[in-house]
Image (cartoon, rainbow, N blue to C red; front, side, top):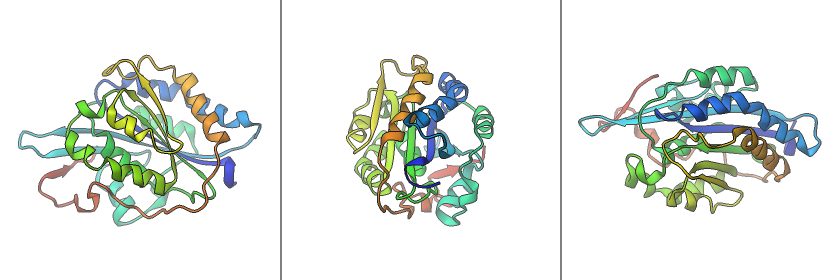
Length: 251
């Protein structure tokens, strides 16, 4: 099934220590997104789901430790499967139950580097943009400006914006007010729901309504023509393995 009844959806989820309310709410309400998609009168949508769960920490020697997991892959193999040895079969699933089970096992700890995680999520092995809606839902309870490695992330914000447009991705942001995220929200088709509180795990968000609204928004949007699928890492992901100031761990 192609065209407007096809969607690849990646939840880019901050899994720092405060985010349990958000994680649990997504697990409980994921079907609402499917209901929203079908609100356009179409009885069937070809939908694949994945997530990029992320948390980070800074060691005493200043090295950044990154933890990235998806539904099927984690750590170094995840990055290798995107950039070094592309393996599309290690990403995405149509099994909603498997998605929920995998997300429910994610540890909640560490700090946030949201733009780095978003960059990797954008490079997931999407289906062609001419045949399929590409959707990323970024969820965090921390403004970019109060996270870690702030300048290292924000200095490449324009590159992230360019990538979103080139990849033809529809971005939804659910996060506290943040100047950097506001700038991201200026991208065509991006939708930004800013919440009033930070560090509360998006506890005040009505995810039943929010996910249904996202589904409806995708269902009425138009698929793009063309669009590149070539990974273009913004933060030098190709150089991470073996670089002395970045350490990878497998969760």
